[in-house]
Structure formats: C-alpha cells, structure tokens
Length: 286
Image (cartoon, one colour):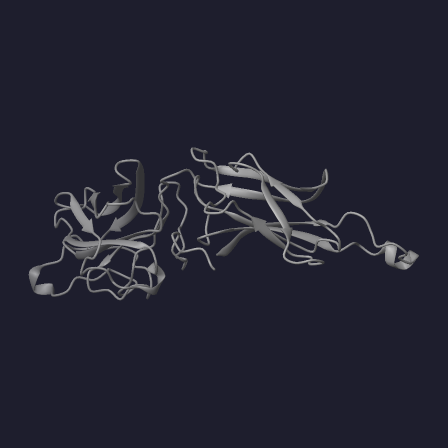
C-alpha cells in the first residue's frame, strides 16, 4: 500500500505533572494518513485504509468519518500503549470509498471520545476515470525521451503512444483521428510499436504507427483519442512544417530537435509530465 494523503493536528491534552516550560512547548502532532492500493488519486469504490501516528498514551479508540466513506472506520492501538493505530475491518471485508462519487476533495475527520484529534482531505476520482500519463507522436524510429521535436514533416512515418494508468477493462484498442492522417489510426495493446519506456511501467500502453499525409499544409493540428468506451477524450496538438518527405529521403525525422518523443499537450493547454507510478490494482500488503 502507498500513502495517498495525510494531515496533522496537535495532540489534545498534556501529560500530568508537566513543568511550566514543558507545558509551553507545542504538543506532539497526530498524523492521520490514508492508504490505497496505488500511489495516485483513488477512485470511487476503491478500498481504503487509514492509520494514525502520534496519539497520546492511553488512547483506546478513534473513529474516522467522511462523506466519501461508506461507513465510519474504527482505529485502535497496534498494541497496549502504542502511539500508532490498526484499522478494524470486518472479517472478510474491506472499507471502501462510496461508489458513485463525483471527482473532488472530501474532508476526513478522526474523533476520539467526541474530540477531533486529526483531519485530512481525501481526493477522489470518479469511477472508470481515465488517467492518461503519456500521449505522444514521434518519428517512428525515434529514441523515446531524448528530446522534443519542434515539428514533423508531411509524409513522415510516425509512432503514436498513449499510456493509461486506469485503462478500461477489455479495451484493447483505441482509434486516433486527425487531419494529418490519411484516415483513422488504430493503436493497440501489446503492439510491436510499444517503445518499452520505463516511464510507462504498470500503465496500459496503446501504440501504433502511420504515415502522415504528404499533402498536409504546415500548421498546428489536433490529434484526438476517445477511450473508456466513448467516455473519455484526450487531445494533443502537433506542428507540421518543412518540405514533404520523399521516398528517397530514407527514415523520416523531425525538422528540428533530433529524434524524440513529442510533448503531450492536453486540450486545456497544460503539459503533462511523465511520472512513474505503480499499478492501481496492486494487492494490499500483508
């Protein structure tokens, strides 16, 4: 399991018999953390675990509540006198985030005998949300990740790669459309065009190749992929410039910038940086 979020609050109360100097010192903080089976934003319906650290001696029970949870979660000391907690789950079951939630941030409160000891904010993605980690168009023979081409020539042979960390079950191919292609391009899982980049670890990689239209005019064009059975649209923008590639030119390359993967630019205009992440379906640690 990986930590997905935390918050801290001062421990309530103080030790009996503390000196004036000790009383003036800030009390130790209580850390409330949540854990999921992946290290990015959990989805509605996912299993979730909570933990506390820094509780005062003698505590016995904390109740964790949130509008995002199916039911309150009870935390108890790992052992007698422990400042850390163990989550109490019903045998054969797991606590989960509510199904059907909208994407957003939800408050979490930890309470002991009616007193708030810590709070946190739980960020939740809607069910079946795509999480596109990479969407690039590069010269087909390029070495992924070595730079960014400023543009591609008309008639270039290109490779298209899309990585989804939350791929829809059973969706083994996607269709790419753009005016720069002669027609729709199908990208697939287990494709020989998959560059095998470390940045794609544990994501579902769709890849394929095509030749750009030789008669496409120079300019900036949109490339679109619809995934999750029509529910999610991802867009990228690429620039076409230079003279068309002729058969005698040999391998096609970018006009400038060398051999490289193209930067992902979403419809919002932001650049999506590549991040390595673990699988969202990793098993809960023993």
